[in-house]
View (cartoon, rainbow, N blue to C red):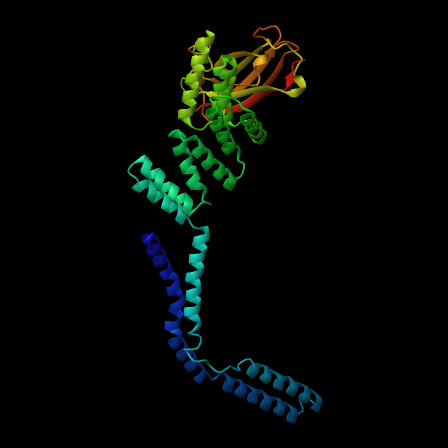
Amino acid sequence: MTLLWLAFAILLLPALWLLVAPLRRARLVHDAQRDFEVNDKSAEQNVAIYQRRLASLEAALERGDIDQERFATDRLDLDRSLLEDTEGQTRRPLQSPAAGRIVVPIVALAVVVGAVLWYQQQGAEGDLALFNDFRQSESLPALVERLEQQAQRQPGNPNVWASLYPLYRDSGQGEAALNALENLIAIEGRVPSLLAQKAQLKFFMADRTLTDEVQALIDETLERDSREPTIFGMLGVHAFDRGDYEQAIDHWRRAIAGMSDSSSSRALREGIQIAQQRLGVAPDEQGAIAQGPGVLVSVSLAEELQGLLDDDTRVFIVARDMEGELPPLAVARVTLGDLPATLVLDDRHAMSDAASLSQASEVRLLVRVTKSGGATPETGDMYGDLEGVPVGDVEGEPVEVVIDRVIE
């Protein structure tokens, strides 16, 4: 902290220098202005010009070039002009160069005090203390002890509780982790991600049971954010424990679609493969780890088209090149009852070695619900499409294709 305030003082020095610098030049400026006023001859020059014009005006009157009325009018204008010129040159007495010096230290003190108060309100002194604790702690117990001391010093700092929560959770201190998380929610508000972590923590503390309290947290979280990945990951675990492997796969796919953490996504993909093996499904289907660049796509059916066809109706998801010159680059198949569904299209879904997703930088996605199950579109089939979809990393948010039209 000493180094922080020393650096803070060094940063204030330029500001204080700018305040003091004008005082050093005050004497020079005062003397220059005084010399200028002493040597200023503009008033004498204006009077001399006035006298020459007045003499010229009187001469014109004597010659008869102007009458007495014109002379009086011009004389009045000449007098007024002289008054205006001399009035603009009236100067106030120069103040002493030492005048106002007392204000400078007052302003300097105000700058220092204001800067310190602002930093205490808006700065990150508390976060710097946390950084030092992480750096200086040689063991996990020592780090937890230091962070607990920080929690007593700065209970309103969310970063303190955000640091303590995972340490408590991973060390099996459920009640302490829950207390840290509740303090974090009290500071940050009922953010969906925090509510989801609280639901997950209570779920595991209740021996992986969906209690009424956990279910209430799930409902509130999904109401605020319908794609919260932590919730779907937890629901997938619950479904897997009950032996509902299809439901577990669906929940985990939804969780992966909203995750940005590649390690968590990888763990869920491995879980999907295990669930598929339990179902007797080959592990190289949609749940397997992607091969090469691909497209993460979410497919759903428009509300006005729901109920028109049976749940076992086939749905084809096709990726084509933008020019339409190549065979389909990737084809996947689900059923209408699987929707909404999130899946990865990649080279595993290629129809031939001559055309695959890795050959394209962007594609057009076409989704068709076919009553006959054939590859050729027919009247009554439902479809949706999306153009200009980039091919690349399959992590992150999926692109959405909505089936909202009927072939007539």
